Image: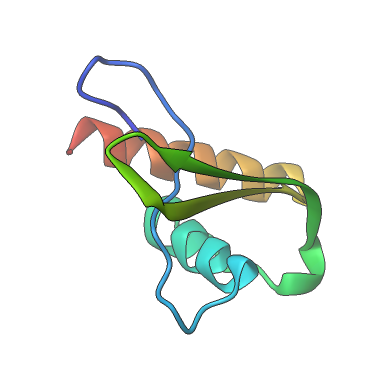
Length: 88
């Protein structure tokens, strides 16, 4: 996604309380990259839990996954992400 400082960043977003990390990621992949992916193509890489100084009592968690993706899917995702960035 294109950020206000014109840097391209990976997509992401908050997940609803009832969602798992994988469900949240699958939702973002569909919403922001136009990809419909099954959970079996996701592979956990790492997680990180942290707090922010402005909300010290709130825990935040990031999760990174690898995604098995054929080249055609990759190019489709890339085009969708860049198109989304141009119209944001």
